[in-house]
Length: 279
Image (cartoon, rainbow, N blue to C red; front, side):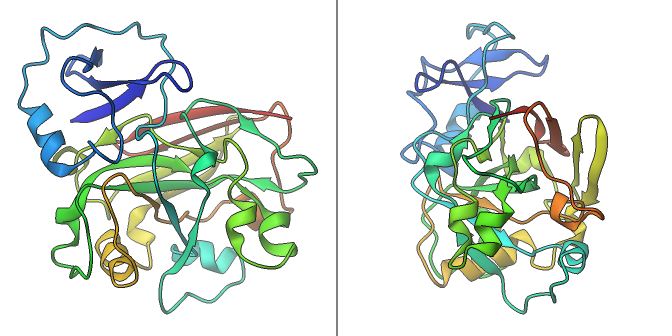
């Protein structure tokens, strides 16, 4: 199924997409999609309900991030072979892990806000994982059993803050609205093979990223297994799994976002995002 959250910022409500593409209000069945409720068991129970009698939501309603009140927002760097090459980095021998502040999370169509002093704000279309069970020391073979679903993520990044200011990457990854998530949380049974999904991103109508999760250096199951050896992953935790080639930093000449630019991106089967860049 495709689950989502809709409504004004801070007042989002739970919903789902029916087979006709209508948004159905799930408020009678669940309070919200948060770390307390985004579990494999809870989502499976919702999928068993007849949705035909649930209220239809106005299709023009704002879509919020597909998980609310997330406790952790993790990310994997340099996880696509061609992206590593375009940034003149060797392929890592282990996953490169970092965090984004959860305060950067926003809806899939909310604006990208350029931070004060930004000169190198960049785009990154990514496959996102939403964890659905407490997860510690799991094997690669069992790792996907701990996934509630997948989503589309734009890992917006200020490269000067990330790379040129020293220290860790988080400060270039965490400005307000640097984490558009959604529109949907797509359950694993509907998402299909996470290692065979097309990712695309365009800026002002020009396609700059067009690749596949097949180019991942570390696949989804390996990422979850690896991370679970260092930390306990919990329901509602979000993991961005890396971006393919075609980021602004890797273009010749380099290209970065400016106010007025329009960014559109999608991951196959997981929905599209559209963001306007503002100062």
